[in-house]
Length: 184
Length: 434
Image 1 (spheres, each protein chain N blue to C red):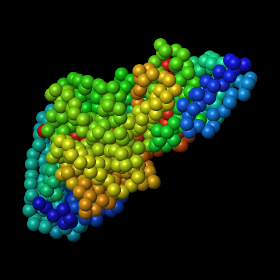
Image 2 (cartoon, rainbow over the protein chains, first blue to last red):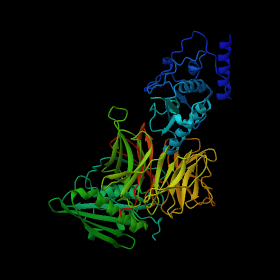
Image 3 (tube, chains in turn purple, red):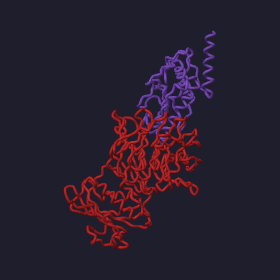
Image 4 (cartoon, each protein chain N blue to C red):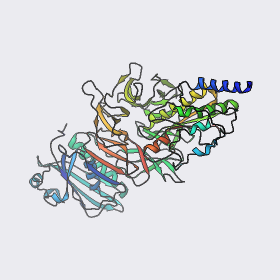
């Protein structure tokens, strides 16, 4: 009884600190398959287009503190945060993912996190290089608030120079406006 | 100073085939009213200079500049090979005020003597004449030299046809052997040569004022870093990198400083680096994105892009401190300013809701802050002025492929420069040859 209460309190704390504007964090239903493979993006871009909508809730907080579903690896493409056009605002639907990554990092103090910021091709390259960095900084800020020390980060921007998808339409552009979280 | 708007015309005789390596498609967007009509009679002679025809180069150069309308061969009133055959009145009746005659003779093994004469039909006199010796390797250079001479004689403006451009090319795009290449070519896109090739991305080339070096941004170490490469000696140095962004290099007019964007102090700002000491001094201090510094020709201030007002706009800041002044007043997005050599105009990437295009405005916006859009969009980038201010080169996308285009500074004449290789972008025009 006491243990259960403790966990509920811990979850509540995360919600308060990390997500002042969150309205949509979902409780994880018991027994649901949270395999992150459902949301795998591949370079041809025919993975799920609506990447951020709803899927990140499967990687949310776990009552038991089990980090097995949030693995930090350099080829884990699921640790991607997406952004609106010309914006560095972290969307609500990315917050569970960020919280899970924060938790994983706190549990593994030896791990550095590389945040790679990107932009879509519209606008000038130099401004987009700066915009990519700003997006990476926004993700870092969220992680720091969740307890990850500021010395744990390497921040790099590639602007529009390393797109995930190279065609020129909104679907492609959305996939390129991203920050990739990599813990090699 | 010649009156730019008197009509003069030159006609061209074509003796030889066009042997272009790139495809130069010239599009007259707004007509040529007010252009100088010219007839270029080539370049008769006992032999052909291969592979390109000198007169084709001159014709393309003058037409592309937007200052000239070139009389088509079918309208020629006569065939002329010698000056004494010239029927001044017949050409004037054809609407022409100037005729360029040329002659090429072989004078040895791969040695040619190229003679040209420019005539003023109104005054019925020869304006100038010259002889150039060249090998077949020099043909394009000679053609551009003749264009320069004719252009300056008739417009009073120094010709920029003998200058070069640098640009970035992606080869084997999307394939396993994809490479990024920094290249230098003639201003019309011909004869490209490679300065630097890499598996990783390259950005933002910038010519030194003496035309001997290129600064550029390379991601070869998986983070932005600035390199300065001497293109004649093929040596390069890496500018000491700071944490974060190291980008947007811009040479001061005296070549002693590099303006650049660094984010080491928390967010992207403009800094000045002394190239002798490599020490940096901060110029902008604002939590916004400040980037894309561009020197005013007098060297006392920089234009730059900032979103301190919410969205990217062009501002001006004195190099030695002082108030930041907003320059662009129209449009939702203005970035990547380039300044005309006389310091009066800027060209920028401009978006007011219908795509990214190149627009030009007076930097002194107190009289008129109007942005004049001179390209079609919708993904146009990186405007760069010719060193005589007459033309602007920029990057655009056609049929999914990156190409370069040149537009006369008033937007009248536009030309795609479709180079044979790769996906091309980020052009920057060299200074005059020293």
